[in-house]
Length: 277
Image 1 (tube, rainbow, N blue to C red):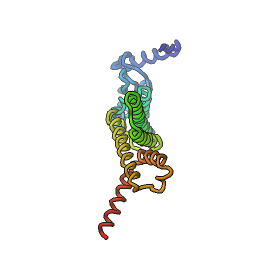
Image 2 (image 1 turned 90 degrees about the vertical axis):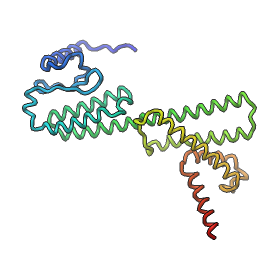
Image 3 (image 1 turned 180 degrees about the vertical axis):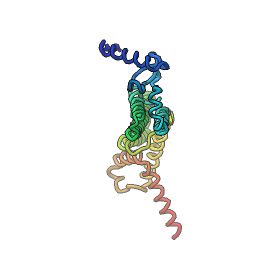
Image 4 (image 1 turned 30 degrees about the vertical axis):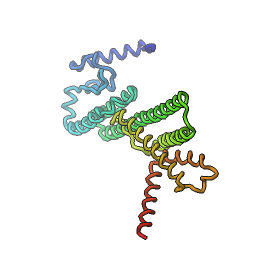
């Protein structure tokens, strides 16, 4: 990747700003400044350091003039620090993480200016931004895991079919399981906005959650096929459209987590009523 050329005038202005900051605030070194968020000469400077964390310095004059709002600033600072060091911050993409930290730095700038209402409002927006990124990251992991598992399943079946002579019955059961897995994938895509996501649990747990859902869908397919073959459900469609009906039922079983529990619960209720007679 080629490095972007920096406009010489912009670089000159940046160097002058750094020089003014270092001259006014002796505790800050030029090498420690990554991005200047806001520099209010004679009052304060807020910047991102080399590890993309918020840092700042205030002048003695500023501290003396704003001593009455120290408690209010401390509350905003506590919230900023808490949001900045959330576990998921290190998981999200670098560019989005930098945007998020910059949002928090702006909130702290508003607090230093005494605009606490605006600071708190922006903190809520920053927190919502982080929550959206958490959902985005977790959803990405789960979709990749789902399609990877299904892809691996297909490759494995093709390899078995190529290397070994398999029966028609085996192929039918594999087809049922595949339709069930596709139903699970469809559920993840359609119901993405209604599910709970959290990348803080880690990539492995998100993968295991999808794997467990796929295993549950495969077991549901087995149950639905057995119930159909035993003439317990959808018996009217068995004579003319049995294969199509089973494929559709397997998709529904993979899509809906409640289908099989609902059918089994109704069977149990019917059996209980029969015994009470």
